[in-house]
Amino acid sequence: MKKSFVLAALAGAAVCSMAFAQPDGSVIINEAMVNPPSPDADGTREFFELKRVSDNGTLQNLWLVVIDGDNNTAGNSTATGVVDFALNLSNFSFGTNGLLLLRDSTLVLQPAPAPETNVVVITPDWQGCTGSVTVGNIDIENGGATYLLVRNFTGSICQDLDTNNDGILDATPWTSVVDALGFIDGDDFDAGIPARQYATQLGGIDFTDNSAIATGFTPDAFARICGDLLSHDMLGTSPGPYVADPAETRFFPDAGQALDGNYTLTPGSPNIEVCGPAGCDDIDFNNNGVFPEDQDVIDFFDVLAGGTPATCDAIAGCNDIDFNNNGVFPEDQDVVDFFNVLAGGTCPQ
Image (cartoon, rainbow, N blue to C red; front, side):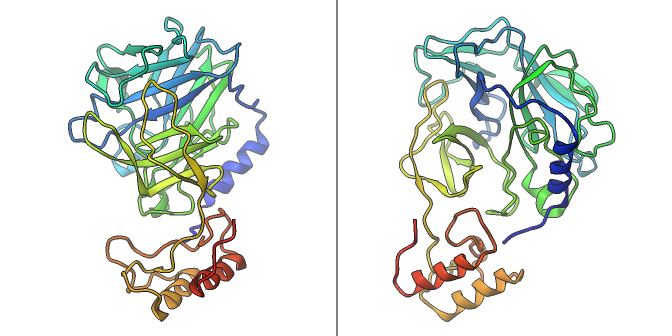
């Protein structure tokens, strides 16, 4: 169901009050896996795939920077706004296909990177911040974070860029932003903990699950496909392939899109463009396997009113109230479409 989040409004106000140029988009974070699902994979099969989008896209003086967004009082290793990770990309190069794959090990990934891709293994693993100390061999931040490509970074790992933790960067130690993506951890979001993402302030994409498609949804991976950013939890085991969990998958900013095909992560190869309209949910709103039934109607209106019916499935829960998956909710059209499908009609496209 829809959840209000005051911090999002504050972040929007911050954008209006600070003059930041839009990311130039000449190079983008095309695909990333920050939390592989297998127990042995978190420190061995993480990756960032960068893509040259335009002819002026260059790695010279370009840095990959990760800013922690979690609230440190929740027991996370670094504080809100701290530079968790920073890597100078100047000495690297794109492959002939315009892709650069940054990895933390040489272990096999499936599907294998394309031979035209330049693959760089960071040795000895990623260097980043733990607490207030710069160390080697870290895992990429799995909780809320902002991922940046910036020019001429002059800051440092463990530097606090948001000293009062208000979600507005107090320091921007770079000359320009090339790409910016960020999200708030689902557990923090659901609990109302004041965690942060800074991508919105920098003109980038916020891919927080602000419609609560799943409790505690924190993406394992994200990719640029179909003109949007696909954020998803992952299923699969090492060495892959890794697929999107259909229960925890969403496009940003166009929530009306849906995966339409056998999508997998493709580290070091062009992303799979398999998308289509999301369509309507099914009418088994409470996911108890019985439909059509009056209880689905009762539960739909209960959730619409802000309730949490006890009749929702213990694992899957009830569906959200954006029945037609157009990203607009609550709205009368969701109610109209729910009853239309209940009566045997089709979902409007």
